[in-house]
Image: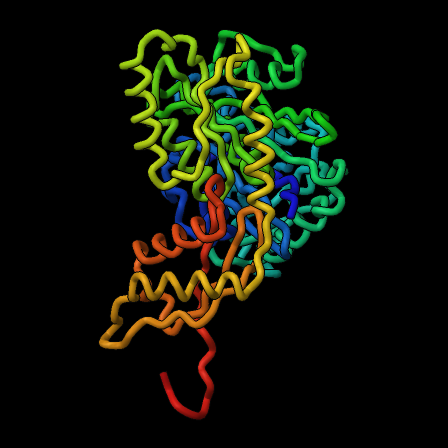
Amino acid sequence: MQNSHCPLVALIGRPNVGKSTLFNRITRARKAIVDPTPGVTRDRHYEKVTVNDRQFILIDTGGIELDRDETMSSLIQQQTRQAIDEADIIVLLLDAKGGLLAEDYEVVKMLRRVDKPFFHVVNKIDGPEQEETLLSQFYELGVDRLWGVSAEHGYGVTDFLDSLVAGMASAEETAALPDSTIRIACIGRPNVGKSSLVNRLLGEERMVVSEIPGTTRDAVDTLLTRNDRNYLLIDTAGIRRKGKVTDKLEKYSVIRALSALERCDIALLLVDAGEGITEQDTKVIGYALERGRACLILVNKWDLVKEDKKRQKKILEEVADATRFMEYAPVLHISALSGAGTNKLFPVIDEVYRQSGLEFPTNMLNRILKKAVEAHTPPLHQGKRLKFYYITQAGTRPPTFLVFANYPKAVHFSYQRFLVNQFATGLGLDKIPIKIILKERQRKKYGKQE
């Protein structure tokens, strides 16, 4: 199954209009901080959302504050302008209780200079009667359509979301690619060599290569045909480390990389041999792990340590430790600038892609399950033995299997990991993740109980 583009939807607006509350309502999670103090959302929060079978990434931004000199307000404003520039769809949230303010006109004027879809949503409308009394003033902004909602109580949110996703291109409408195109995302911190690697693989200076971190502002897709196979190379803005106030402006790089991870088949995770594994590298690895992406770990700039065996050993130990839950991911040493080691990339990419698309007969899967259970008897749950009845394949990329059991929620993580390892070995899937989903077998209403 090919991964379609996952649009980025940015929630913007003045402070304290309810962006974080609406974000929480839509994502059904308390991920953002809700606080009446203006400017409390110091950086973006993002979450993958599914509405009417359409997926998108929702971004909660800090508020726009115009004509302010305070450092944090200035940063929030810059950050929100960046969201306006880089999001696919913009949702401007206005405040019905606060009324129409001069700043609202300025924000709408800013949005009209942007050639992308945007929605005007008026928050703190608790019912149809309030739409009649509170909504009309906002038509003075010169907009054709307003959506009245209550982020706190849910009024109008479903209708707004229906309209939001109705305009999104479906998976079938996204840009057509040749059949069996392998989508490859280059992921990593700034200045790790992503653009240099893409240039090397393309054999031409297609990407701008610079020593200044953050040159790549967006994800750039390039189609490459090699030995009659098609590859879509996605170069992404780097994922920066957290900590400094100025780094808050780079949060979007993380979101853009997340978007690339959503739609790629294989992620190339670049690590800098000169710096070794950093905390932010482990975050990047975590993002890929969460999404079940097939990955290659590329230790770039290997030429910097080619004469230092001790340093090489230390780096590889760090990589092994950081990828202990991703042991299947091949690790290659390369130099994107000189080209050393890059000739090995495509054969490994082809093999990873082949494995991730494999389908297996049910009888073969059940033989492996039976053998695994016999080798390691499942533990007891409240005095009763856990039983695994049968297994079937539910999908590919990654290969996904449904295992039916009597008490699936009682299966410990360690035993599920044991099963994953047994199937990876038994099926010869040594370079990709596999996913096992435990489901409860429907019990008969009558007859003998388990």
